[in-house]
Image 1 (cartoon, helix red, strand yellow):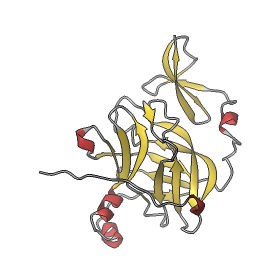
Image 2 (cartoon, rainbow, N blue to C red):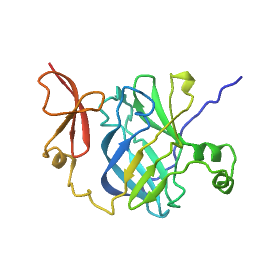
Image 3 (cartoon, rainbow, N blue to C red):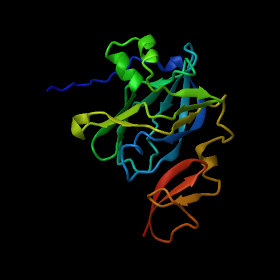
Image 4 (tube, rainbow, N blue to C red):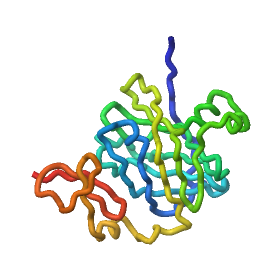
Amino acid sequence: AGKTAYVYGSDDEDGEWESLGMTWYNESFVAGYYEEIPEIELNVEIQKHKSVAGFYRLVNPYAAHPFCTSVNHQGHNHYIYIHAEEPDYVYIENSPIGADFGYGEGRVTSTVANLLDSGCTMAAIKTAGVDFGTLEDDIIEFRNWGLWYGERDYFDGDWTSTGEHFRVRVPSGGMSGIDSVSDAYSMEPEYFNLQGVRLQDKPDAGVFIEKRAGVSRKVIVK
């Protein structure tokens, strides 16, 4: 019996990163953890490392999530770090996300990162047949799980397997055809109930999800 304490810090230099603009992130960490939260696409900023080809990070990826009860950035950013230096062996670093969905701040990781933290070599992990993600046709994807999520106040912050259908588009540059989030909101909206089922028309009352060009938000109409 025992516990492990995680203390997160960062020695990142923002000058080492270059923005690729906004992109679409199919969220499945939290959706795979909570039965009542559907998978949704979020509009997030993606950055690439200037000197490490294939190393990316998503900036404050949960700031606009409609089910997030609070976001704690306090003058700094949170990131999901994605290692895609080898397109067939993509993994995600152990990182806090600065977002609370009801049981304290959440954090994300991958099976590969956990094994590396425990002292395994990358060569041994590849030989063992562990689930990696892939980078193909500008899409980073985890098809067979391989990802983990935990929240500070749920089961003492222990990890839960999740992440199937994690998907991020890596744009070659710019805003992927949309110049800004406000431009995205000029597009026609789609409406979904809280179970993720698309609605034909905008509800006159109740709680629902509004989605425009991949940007989702929770709406309450009384």
